[in-house]
Every structure is written in structure tokens, then in C-alpha cells.
Length: 230
Image (tube, rainbow, N blue to C red; front, side):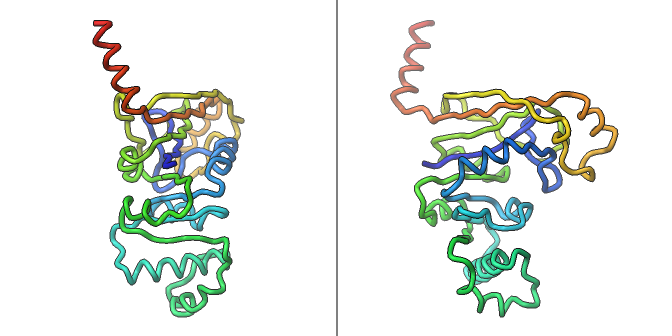
């Protein structure tokens, strides 16, 4: 299975200034439960915003600018950083590389130069593309399942989730939820205080949506049905 998992608000906003402009605990739990034990593929900026490999999962970071040597170096740094619980300073790169063997076995992180290479590197049968915007856009051609959280709320954003290609996916489940008002905005520095206060006065609702890619036979039957109806 290759899946995309994402959360977006009004206007399909997924991020602002390298961060998620909301905090919904239930959505985080939903993400952890779905992706547990699988492979997560993310862009470098997404990885940097998280700050560490996601535990209990195989992490593959896509960075189009990395050479083979840098891929090996970045992988070594990330593994050691995970074992120490902090980032590795540039001044200790040599010792970081030498310490890879000491990193915990459950920490699994690799680097790839593009999405097809990342998919080839994945060793687990449940693969999740978790952002950012460009990987989501590219990943729609590969994904057979979409796990989307649709948030009813307007937030500042400079990154957006792409529109789904028409006739490619079918909604198979949807469940509506409500969030605690106090959780609505995560980081004060990202939104003006007045806007935060306005948002806090309104109740925020969201939905967990699951889509599956239509098989060729399903597409043809839908096309045939629409022709007959016309």
C-alpha cells in the first residue's frame, strides 16, 4: 500500500512558515495509529520542521540536492541525533559518522534524491507520504489510499494540499469530530493575537476522510453510466 496522509484547513492550507498552524491532539493520535510500523516518506523541510525521525517507523527523507556522499553523511548525522535526542553540530560530524553503529536499531532513517527512489528504498509494505506540498502533488500519481483530515477553519498558509484528480479516487469513509477550543492554534508567533482570539471563540470541527483509488473497471463503469444517463 502506498498512501498519502495529510491534514488541511480552508483553502487546503497545510502549513505556514515551516510549521502547522494548528494543534489537534486527536489528529496527531490518528496519524500515529495509521502510520505505526510503516514507512514514512517526507521532504527535507518537513523533516526539519519535525526535528527528528519518527519512532517505530522507517523514515525516508527526500532531498533533491544531496549527492551520494552527502546522503551517507546526513543519514549518519540523523541516526546519531536520534540516539542522543538532539541535533548533531557540524563540528562533530566525524565523530557522528563513527558512532552510527551505536545508534538504536529501531531508528531507521535514509535519504533519497526523489520520490521514486524513496519508494524503491522502502522495505515495509505500508508506505505513507507525509509531506510537504511538492511530494503530495507528485505522490498522487503513486498513492492508492488517501488519509485526509479536513479542518473547518481559516488559518494563514503558504503551503497547500493539491486538488484531487477528477475521477481517480472514491471517498469510502468520513467521520466528523470537534476539537477543544484551547487546542485551536498551536504557535502564537505564527498568527496575530487578535486573529487567535477570534478563532478561539469559534468551535473547530474536522473530519477524517479515507479515499481509495478507483480501479480501471470502476472508472469505465462510471463513464459508461454517465453516457447512458445522457
